[in-house]
Image 1: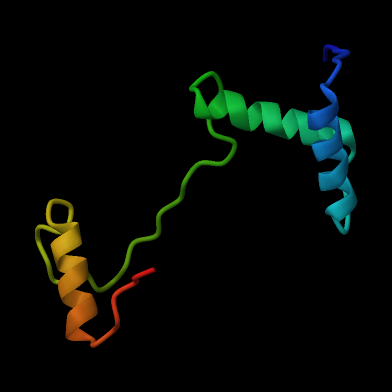
Image 2: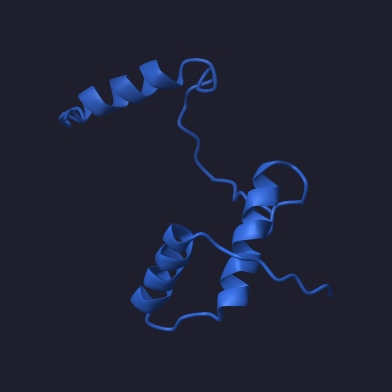
Length: 89
């Protein structure tokens, strides 16, 4: 394992310290920074995602055959058929 000594700008260091203070069970600072770097590099494709996504199948489908193409229309129909108010600001 390599050791790296970095200097953070005051705004970033203050934000990091505030985050640590807000946690009930704070991790050590080096763990927080390591996790942030892992997340950053994973999102950019330099590391594999930390946890694989596991989808569980359902025993009953929606009954629609074109959900992947018409998802907005199908969702809207389901919302209005159940008399749910649309999500409006």
